[in-house]
Length: 458
Ligand code: GDP
Image (cartoon, rainbow, N blue to C red; front, top):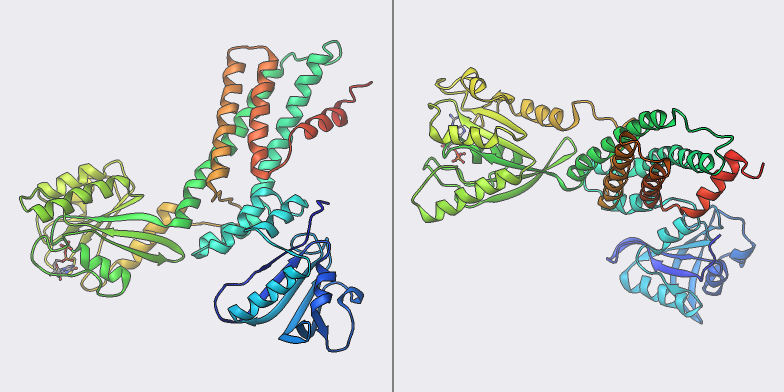
């Protein structure tokens, strides 16, 4: 157990609310609480069983500060694994601050940001990936972000990373032992075996890294840009998607001059939608800026929605847009299906290999198919958090990428028939990088592993 001083903080928001919580954690938490808490029945918290709630008052000398409920949770069965007291007071900013100030006067120190979670980690109750998930749960802004953070909090990343680490350490230990004791442990045929195994690790880590891309989108929203020639119906589509008349819709070509950005949630997936001016060559200065921006946005977007006008012929603007999105994740919406058909789905399919959905922005037809297609594109239609892990954290992604590089180096060394100690150096790098995700230490693990598996002293 990591021993420390006792810390305290207001754990609820710093605004006026029904209830506020002052949390105290550390070896003196109960003693400090008893100094300021008057129970109705005169009993001390120190004499109470753990995981109980008590009703009474917080008192500063003779002055009664608030009527409270006090939660008593003794370590290790608490968030931090330490003795913890949570004072549920009335959620006035002044009242909470008075209580916090009183608690610090009686011996607690003000907690640093994230310090309760840090203690949970240092005390071994959670690993680093879980600690980070706590922050992600708090920051989650949509259903998928929340689910993925909770899954990580429950240890999904820890488990995946740990499994690979255990196997890697086994191989490192094996190589080291064989090098130390070549008479008894043979490395004949071993490189092939390691090659096969390394390939599996590479595959697994690659898919974890790929999930980081999805994870990032879930947290921040899929950057979506709507393109199309003027008057195709981009603003109308945006209005339908947002459910209100936000963009100005007119029938003068080129009205949507600047770039509008809107955030919307589509079955739990966040989309950052950017509506741009129509893409076309123009002499109009104001419009030109819009067009240039449109092209830039289309380049950076995760998803391009191209609105084509089915009531007019495809022209050189359409051709230019189709070129622009040929290698992008894109969906074609063939708008104005309520009018006479001039451009058909087939005409677009002949030119572009993308999903084409007939819609009418005006009559709100085909929008559900658009939603379903977006979901399918990003989650293959059957996103499940039970069997899929999403890495949502960039630090973890960076560590995974480093580990991947090291494992690829192992493959190269095997293929170039390098000596075995080359393998273990890169395996060790991968092991350490993965360990930085979970926050596990390295040196001691390795030593223990070698002794426990191979009985070197024998
Ligand atoms: P933008 O320049 O691409 O943003 O196009 P707008 O959304 O401003 O639409 C241009 C014109 O087309 C407006 O008069 C809209 O009312 C009309 N419009 C948009 N979508 C449809 C549709 O599905 N059917 C019909 N009939 N008209 C539409």
